Amino acid sequence: MTSFRKEFKINRRGLLLGMSALVTVASFTQSPVLAASNGHIHEPDSIVQFMLVSKLLVPHELDPFVGHKIYNALSDSEEGFDNTVTALQDFIMKNAVVDVEHLMPALTDAALKNSALKIISAWYSGVVHGKSGDRVVAFEEALMFKVTNDVMTIPSYAKSAPNAWNATAVPLLNMPSF
Image (cartoon, rainbow, N blue to C red):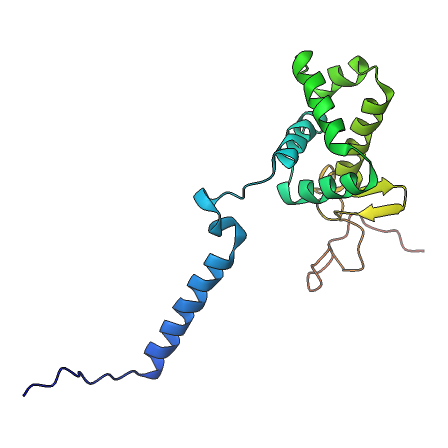
């Protein structure tokens, strides 16, 4: 009678390769970006709407992760923030506003204008100012640092830039000796 059992041998290299392949597959399936269908995270409509309004208010490439944090912080600090974002988007659509330079003078409602300024301020400073205090939502990704990142380093205790503890600081100019 023939045995259906086949001798199974595994060596250390095969075991390590198999384990590393399993870990890699597991990390990709745990990743929220790749686990979501089509490789996109499905955001609630309110966050998508906030990012659309933000894109008009702040004409830069905006980080969706930072946008989510700004949205959450503004929602916590301002009552009815979703309604405000909807009202801003409706105003933009109704008046066919194409950029922030045309939007701000056209906004006559003080509450809407104030909310638009809060959104702009949060993107540039990385801080949301609320009733219960200030909430930092971004540091390296704050847009005020993006404007000068080619000539200045972001303020940090690191020598050259945030999270660059081993890099040698490049002097900006020759300092005079006295």
